[in-house]
Length: 226
Image 1 (cartoon, rainbow, N blue to C red):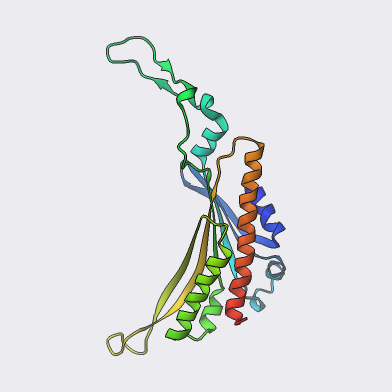
Image 2: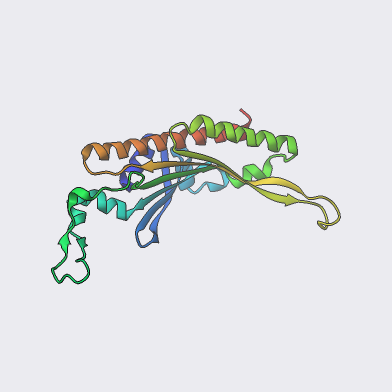
């Protein structure tokens, strides 16, 4: 699944660095990477980091291993691990569970692909911060989310504020400027049990990669003032 996701990102013109993976809990697994436009990633990997400041997308593939196992085993395979306990006072061994009575809940997913698109911190530090420009930035991010997140299952705009004031806080009202912004997209991964299902999973990765690429370009345009 991770290889399929990386291939989809590559096809969308994105390169990924700082890959890592691990577990969030005993039954879940995640893969993460930081995606950039491929041309900018080439500059980053050349060592010329000081001359490049570009938006990035934190990509997370979170997999529910329980759902994955159940989807791969199917009802008959899952039933082989289960048994019906005997009624009270009955010494007969438990009967096997009927596979026909087993179904995965309709809201069970294999997991999620999450994308968190953000500008570099330097871009926020260099921009002017006042109520009018901050309101404009919020509206531009909302438009970015709406226009690039049509294929996502959920979209959020995150804006973190930092207090700005001269002297002690009690001497004058503190202003707030955006110190961290991002646009978050989430895609549900369907249950995969056969070849058509695997193709559908690849389609989700392709939609996510396309969304990330478009969001990176829009984020760049917002801060360049295009």
